[in-house]
Amino acid sequence: MTKPKLTQQDFPLSFGAFAPVDYVVVALPDEAATEALMADLDGAGFAPEDIVRHSAADMAQHLKALLPDVSGAAGFGSEAHYMSNYYALAEAGCPWLLVHAPETEQETRVAALARDRGAKVANKYNMLTLEELL
Image (cartoon, rainbow, N blue to C red; front, side):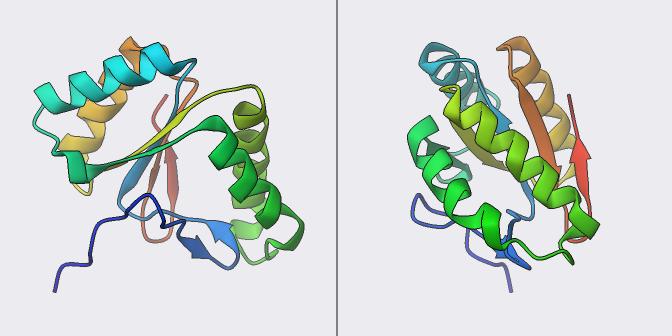
């Protein structure tokens, strides 16, 4: 059975850490780059339901609430480190896209498009690992 894709209201966690499995998490420099990447993703065959958009303020709010309580079991602290970096980027005004990309070819396309739009971060969340794509 296929699990449902994320929506704007979802903020998936594992051991208290942000963990959107099968998604590439992308931080962009500004709204113009975000709009451009969304158009690029559409042109590359990603459907609107494959993409979840979070404003910088929304992402910062979610992460600020989670950071004090993230479990030490969450990737032996690496997820907490990533969340701290994400929080700093969100506080600096970076908008975010979460792109459903369960297949290697999809994550490669997302990473290439994100790089072209000046992404600050593009990380793929797998079941037990997190891959830095940029």
